[in-house]
Image (cartoon, rainbow, N blue to C red; front, side, top):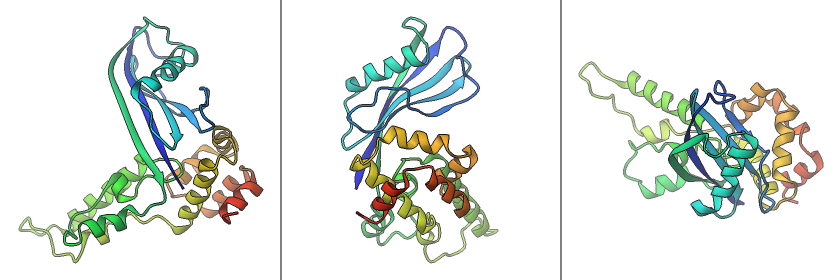
Length: 244
């Protein structure tokens, strides 16, 4: 199962303070849902009058920049209440994140078998959650682990103590059960067994935010995961988990 999380966004500056300039918006499903796949808005205020606003889609294929514009601008104007002329676009961004259970780490080792000191990070390090594309916190934690390991291995001479394979020692390895969760949710999204936007809304509405964020980070407790699973359509998810 495989999708692309693809998006386009505006770095925009407003004439007046942003209504919610003190907080970000991770997934805002108050946007037009296109093609049966989840679509959502994302807002990251950087200053009181400056923010990144994105329109994001989970679907098999990425779009051209022009295809995003009407949806992105409808979100800015109708949902965020920023009327044309009340802001200016200073930069435009566009990107994509693979959503799949492919083993990027194994592919990296096959490609660079003679470079055990080369540690992949980000998507190539397997840090993007296959079912959500959620990557940011995983990257922060992995980078911190790398820095701490390097600091411990630093010798008084300034050289690093010999390590058989930094790549293997510092590989990102989430608990195996998260791979099963990702595979299940990804199958539901790819096969459109349930409206994707509604599924995520149920997750956010039915669980304490700290528990859900820990789940997205791959750091949740199993007891919390039971509650998270109970907030989804259980029979449908169980069938997807069993490959039915």
